[in-house]
Image 1 (cartoon, rainbow, N blue to C red):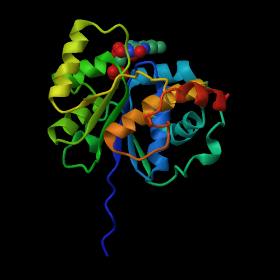
Image 2: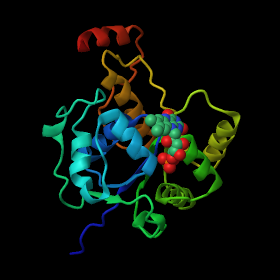
Image 3: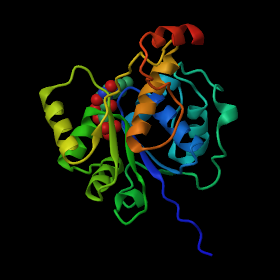
Image 4: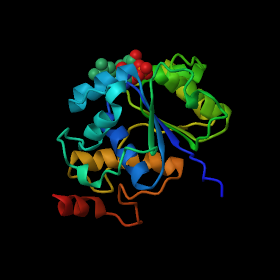
Length: 231
Ligand SMILES: Cc1cc2nc3c(=O)[nH]c(=O)nc-3n(C[C@H](O)[C@H](O)[C@H](O)COP(=O)(O)O)c2cc1C
């Protein structure tokens, strides 16, 4: 019998602040049994180092990814280590950001869709204009042209008019523009709750099942009660 085809989610991590959002999305995709093709931009390696202390090296990406995903939003290691799946097989592939011959640079490469998390304004501009200056931007443009789901978790504030116009262009091209904008009705007593809410909404937009946050159930007053519960 033919092997089932691998059909990954492409996760592009660009150099906006917010690498904990990417970690939460990656952990939840893996927990949901999805495979992942990962592209970490050069600038994202700076934000990752700054926010977690992890150096992301192409030659040691499995170790570095494991070290990153083991950390919570507070940057402390080992929080999630026990729950991490085995990263040694083909569940995760990592592509160099400058590798424009990589799988995700072609529409004929199988993929479910792509999440850009976090998305820098530079990545927003590049994808809106179709620049394809690196693999992350090329893969996002391919995702749009193939009419696959593209979720862009933009992180910048305030937003310049130019970026706002580019976000409208992405929306019109079929992307879901999902600002890293947490709500507090799900109960937020810890920084990880805030991160998980944004990551969960990104996965909702992609149609991936998760239990990262507590959904609104039509009753006021629950957010405060849930915060107390968590503390
Ligand atoms: C520590 C740090 C934090 C940054 N935070 C943001 C941010 O929140 N949003 C943003 O749009 N750019 C941010 N930048 C700037 C981007 O990294 C920069 O525009 C870069 O060119 C993005 O490249 P990329 O889209 O290829 O990752 C930050 C840069 C650094 C070094």
